[in-house]
Length: 276
Image 1 (cartoon, helix red, strand yellow):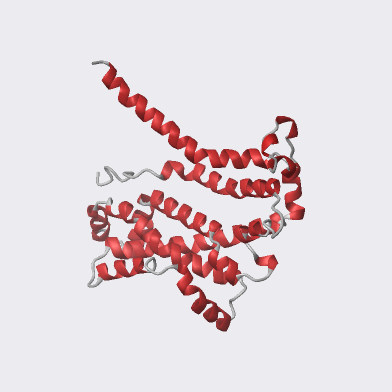
Image 2: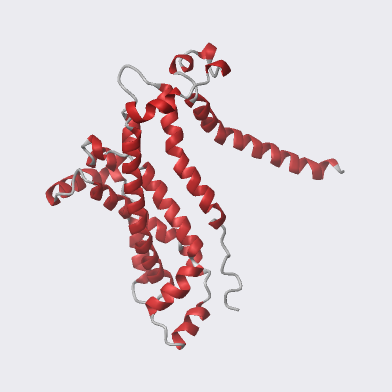
């Protein structure tokens, strides 16, 4: 009888280990490949030779892949998109989840309608619109699209954080004479700080990895972001696997660092007991 209680934890641990292997194996493969020359990587018999360890791929990144330039471009676009999307999502979430007015539910549904249409359907009309307005081939066009697609979803992400705040806190502040903006700034923002971090992380990662609109709206090589720059490493006749793996590792590092910083905020219930 004692074997049964032990079987469940063992199976659970085995399944967890299997999932970690499935998820982590591509990243491990990418990291190991970044320290091997391409001549070794294309030969299955010599794959991941310890004596072939090299830092040459990372040393070639700035010159051959123009990595520093596209890294700067991605940072500018991702940070600007995040800085704009967070206030917009915060104000929209406060309006939808904490205030009452006619048509509030309709507004909430309209915010999510943007995800009904695939981005490819909007590509041609947006290209024409940006071309006529003079923002085509600028970071502004890409920032506008990143905010347009990430802000509505960020509003939905904030739902759990906003609905967990007791209404008594706002009522007490209103009785003391606080305005809506004062309540938002001094009460709502501190209590929903974890939600703001979560939505900011989502917006940054979305902007960091966006490919479709960046490949069409950014024409000059000096403006291209990481997804477009890495695509240039894949040519018609050859692929520099070592250089591509090193670029992929360096591209993933900012996202890993961001999640390492924001991971502790991915816990709900921070407002428990706030009404006290």
